[in-house]
Image (cartoon, rainbow, N blue to C red; front, top):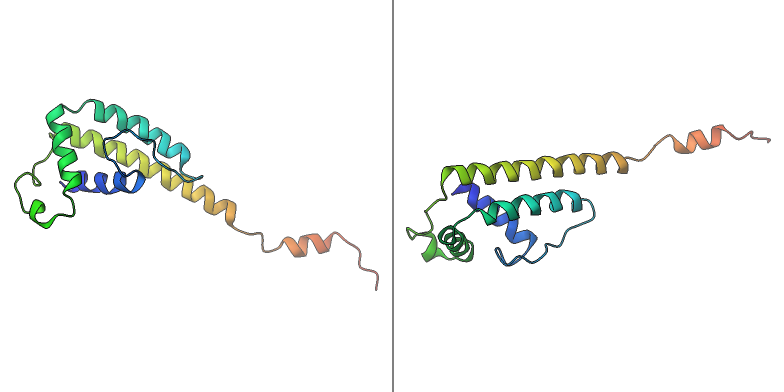
Length: 126
């Protein structure tokens, strides 16, 4: 239930309808990671049975409903192989996002010696 819940929160933040198939809005830095995730997720979602799709949709819809969270339907899980498959898709997505984040940080680090290097090339005639 924890993996499904984390996945639902991630998907809810990327696009409002969970199983509607609308394109997710992405930022500039995560575009490639999101595209790969979307393809993997679409193939995973296609492997779900109609009953499993309905269960996941109901759980996503009732995520913030106190009464629903106490029900037996909320505590149901997908089969282990499908959870493991989804966990691997999420793991791949987070690894790609982490790599993109590190690359972005490296690009943003300013060269603190740039002024000295620029001034060092010129001859000062006082």
